[in-house]
Image 1 (cartoon, rainbow, N blue to C red):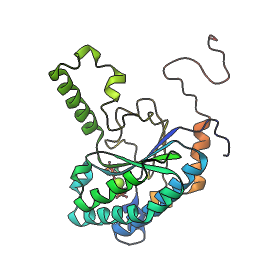
Image 2: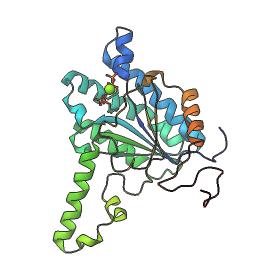
Image 3: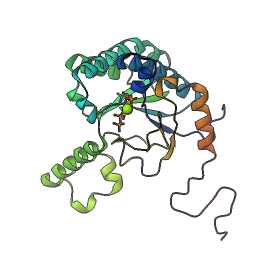
Length: 246
Ligand code: IPE
Ligand code: IPE
Ligand code: MG
């Protein structure tokens, strides 16, 4: 795929299956997450190379706080390692890092590294790498609703001014286009509280492949599959058929 035609502008990925990948090898879950971090590097690099504008990765959900202390600590440690090791790669490749979610719940040292990397890369415009950290789709909507309510209370906004476009500006994803393509690895047929509002019209692709095994080749084939989807958005137009053909 070397032409930009038909390429999604925004790809969002539910990176699932690290634990199962490790279990199959009788390894511990942390080792699965470590291999998952390698896949993050690969997919980020390929996305940048192809010309994707935004790559959103679901790295830690609001529900994931219910995992064992040990696993949470390992994931936070890995996140720190990733932020340190990828800084130069992000800078060299003109990638801007941003994050969505309740990032103030993250340990202080992770927040510091995250904020430093976000600031350092803020001038980059080659691609946006958006990490969903301590992210929940319902929390995103509630957080936005509270901001709207405060605006109304202050008299700066009337309830009728709360349109879809306006509401969008209060979401963690404000300013980003909605995902065109949502990929989930490891076969679960669910959304797991990911971008509930934003995926209203995303094309969905679920692969059985476990995240650590997810490769450039498979990513390219999913992007090719996406290219052939007929995105009707509720209308009747189909590819190659004239608008008014019945
Ligand atoms: C995804 O892999 C990574 C996170 C949710 C942080 P999992 O850890 O959920 O792996 P499985 O689903 O147990 O295989
Ligand atoms: C979704 O995976 C969250 C992330 C990938 C960060 P989970 O493994 O937490 O989802 P469930 O529990 O299978 O729905
Ligand atoms: Mg999982």
